[in-house]
Length: 357
Ligand SMILES: [Zn+2]
Image (cartoon, rainbow, N blue to C red; front, side, top):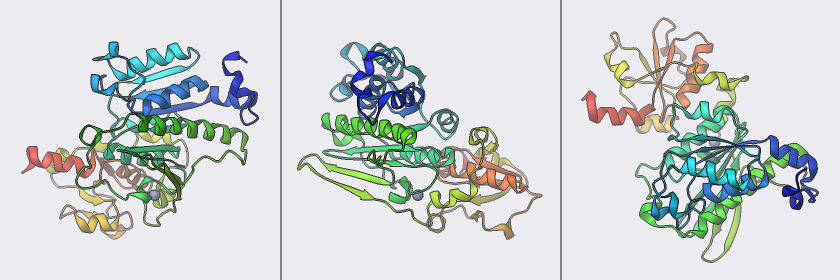
């Protein structure tokens, strides 16, 4: 074993076997910003074998105060590309997969499917919810991280079972809470939280390999920090019975979920409104969400079998178009002609403004 890793191999919790596990691990980091920068550096330095980086942004001078992966000469360059070069210089044994694109409901399953564990380095709610649903669909763990001014949170959602991010926050807030650009961020805060995400990823990999009881990844827990007062506490989450993570147990495909990426065919809202006769419309969000708002003609839920017909096309929607993919998979396995509506209600609301009315 290379002397590069000597200082961690001497730890009984790592050893040669643990180092080998790290070198075989595939970790996807979504967002190479304030959280992603330190997280990526520690993952690469520790010898994680394959690291994926998803970021469609370019380096801005105002990023440098906290995004320590980048330097002044990188301003204007692609973050994913600079991350690949800089981290490659740090550790040339790591294989990098760089995705210079925004994570969407259309590419997320495909990108996520080739990794063992996903790190949330994002700063917006929609992507956090998308990552949560992707983690549940692919049954892969999600290392969650979040910062707000002088506060931070870290935790792991296990993916196969709840609790998940939706158990904590059922839906994205109606009014988007200010992102870093609007509310300000103290650079060392994402530095601590992103480093802790890397720590949890490494612990999770070693825990999977060696199952040591003294390595206790934050599975189903959220560590909360107030960096002004240095008060820390850890919450133990419980699964909500009406949450997607409880339902997904039944509707997720049991084998080869990667194949599901392209399987449920998708339609757009334009397709729906231009079809004659109109397909059946099915809303697969929670009962509460349905009650709050739904399209007038939409039936609700996979349980509403009475209203569905195997001879008529069914267009299925949810909030963002990920849960509806799962529902389509389930309906198709039972002989229904189901299609998932791309982008979900979010896309409908956007389209409504542009073309339909
Ligand atoms: Zn949940």
